[in-house]
Picture 1 (cartoon, rainbow, N blue to C red):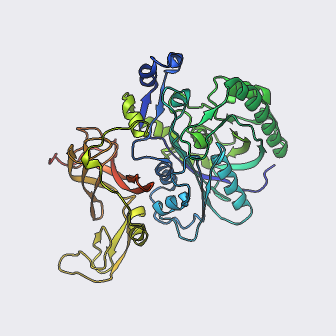
Picture 2: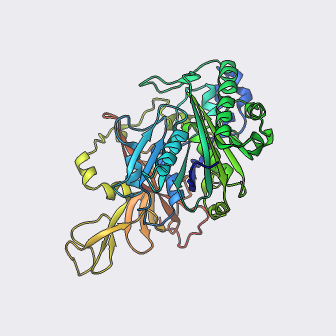
Picture 3: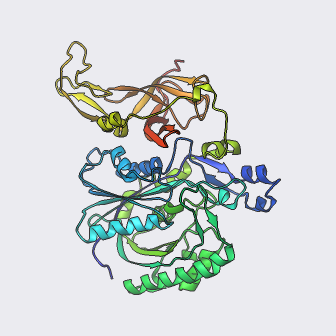
Length: 497
C-alpha cells in the first residue's frame, strides 16, 4: 500500500543532439581492438564540447519547468551525478542559479555511486513525505570519460533527466521502495582518476546483478504488498544483453515488461540512466500501470510507481522521446576524442589566453551571468541586457528604475551573425551574432549546435545554458548562455551576412 500520497508531478529530459556512430569508433580502433568490431552497431549520445553534467541537468530541468517565470513552488533541488564539474563547490547551487530558483531553497549534491540518480529521487520523496519540502526538483546527469578502444567508450552515453516530487496533481503515485547497500565492487574510479576500472563481466553478472537485484526487488514488492505479476514496466539500466529479461523472470515478472535500455540509440548515461529510462517509459505508459524502477551499484535501489490519469498532461513535454528524435549523426571519431579531452591538440596562439574569472564580479552579477536576467525600466518599459543603474530608453535615461527581466525562456531570432575561422574555437568556425528578443532587448552571444552554412539572419533560436570557456590553470569552468536554432522554425528574414 502507498506510504503517503506523494509521487511524481512532472518530468523533463535531455539527450545531446550529437550521436556518434559506433561504427566510427570500432573502425578507427580495429587495428588495436578487433574484438570490439561486433559492438559497432547503433549510436551513442555525445555531448558537445561545451556540455557537461551541469548544463545537461539544467536543460532537463527547463524541459520540466517550462517557460513559467514563477518557480517559487520549488523549495528543494537534489542533483545526482558521478561526474560533478566541481569537487568542492555546490553544483546543485549552480543549477539553481541558472534556473533562477528562489534563494531560500535547499540544494543537495548526491554522488559517488551509479545509484546517485535514484538516491537523489529517494531523498526528495522522503523530504516531501516528511513535510520538510512541498515540491522538490530532482536532476540527474552524467558525462563520463572512457579510454579510447575500450568497451565503455561504446557503451556509455551522455544525458540528463529531471523529475519533480510533490503531494498533489501527481502523474505517478509513489507506492514504496527498498534499498540494499552492498559493497560489491563491479567497477570503481579512484579519487583524481579520469576513467572507471571494471572487473570481469561474468562476476558482475552472476554474483552482482543476479543475486542483488532479485533480493532488492523482492523487498520492495513485500513492502508494497504487490506481486511481481502486478508490474507492467521493469526499468533497469544494464549493458549486458538479455540480462534484464533473465532478471525479470527470476523475480517473477513478465520478461515482456522489461523497458527499452536505449543502448542502441543513446548508450548508458550513468547515474542518470535509471531516470532517463523511467521518463522514456512514462512517455509510453498508460494510466493505472505500475512501474518498477531499479538501479544497481553498491547495492540496489528499487522504487515502485503507479501512473495516474494526469500522465496525459505531459504529452506536450519534449522529454527523452523528443530529445532522441532531435539528433545529428556524427562520424568524426577524432572530434569525439577532442571534445571529451582525450587527446592533446594544438590550439594556436589565439587559444592561449588566460581565462581567470573574477569571482567577486561573478557573485555581484550572478543573476545576469547564470540566469540571463537583464533589466526592465519601470517608467518606460524598455528592456535591456545587462541591467544597469541608467536606463537605455531613448531621451529618458532614468536612474535606478530597472527591475529584473528574464531573457532565458523568451523567443528570439538572429539579427546578424558571423562564422569566424580566425578567433579560437573548440569547434570552428566560431559562430556568434546579435540576438534580438521578442518583447525587446538584444544580446551579442555565441551560437551553438550548428554546422557551417546552417546559420542565417531571421533564424529563430532558443537560449541554452552552456560552458563559456575553461580556466585550465585553476580548474574553473565559466558558464553562460548561448543561442541554438529552433529546428522546426521557418526563417523570417533574408540573409544579411
